[in-house]
Image 1 (cartoon, rainbow, N blue to C red):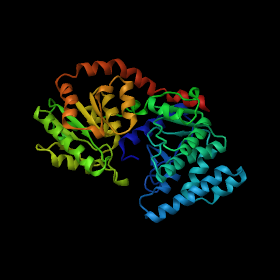
Image 2: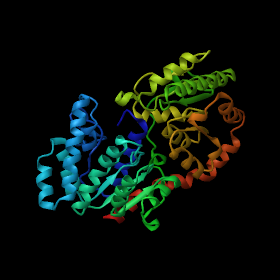
Image 3: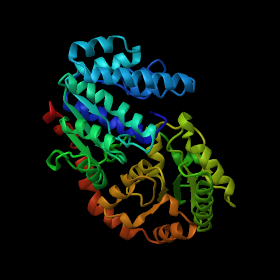
Length: 405
């Protein structure tokens, strides 16, 4: 969790909003970090989760498959059977899964933090992802506990059975808050009434930590030098991924030819599922003819926000790197890999500065980047007009949470 700066920021904001709404509440996190390794996050106790337990990358694949099968059967039984049987099933769950099941069933409110995890891909993996994401909400709803889906993306859901399950859970929820219009469409396709869907704003726009690092001194950039940030990720099939990385390298060379300094920034630095941006960014740097600066270490998510603050421009694939930059009024060219990118950029009037990841070429990217390097005034004017209201909406969740109890 904390090695994905975007997810960590969303959790940080969610905790702050919950604590603002209910100052005396006993708050716990059912998170994706092992509670034995990370027993707390920003002082709030972490109990682990069913989803973390079944996806634990530290155990062998056969054991993970066995965990998914057993928890899938037990979870289904607990949700379908009458309450006395549900308690009996929960009592024999593995310790971590039992902790979350009991926590959500005995809470006064369950809040599903923002993000982009309520989705399904084609195939068996898609079914199991949407099931285990929704299972805690099903436990809570069976016990009569209200569930709020904090601002996040929903979908895609390619199968009718997936849409049916999502619709069942969301219709019974106290609040469903999609963060872009595409997600609204996905929810409508799940037969959720339009009046129950409340269009919201990504909580990352409310993330504003204090600065703790002098980044220019740390990476060796003078106070008057222009700094251009780049975030990249592994996403495409091997041949397309290599093309994307080489085209980004060409653009970095062009940026540095203007006299600006380029810095590759790892928004995610975890070895879970090989999703470590530093691996991809090292390859990009190797393709460059003039070596860019690199942040090749694990950086606290709060400190990473300060690095984006120092940039004059961001070329961002990881979308929360774009959000971190926009909230510091840094112009961004966003490389889209999921619909959240285009939806949120369009909300802000910045849709023309989005390029799908599969379409990335140096020529297309440079056509967006070069004008911003020369004169970002028009972009900044759009930000000045649209960003303050957007940030204010991102700060409004505490009031909505109080309404839900």
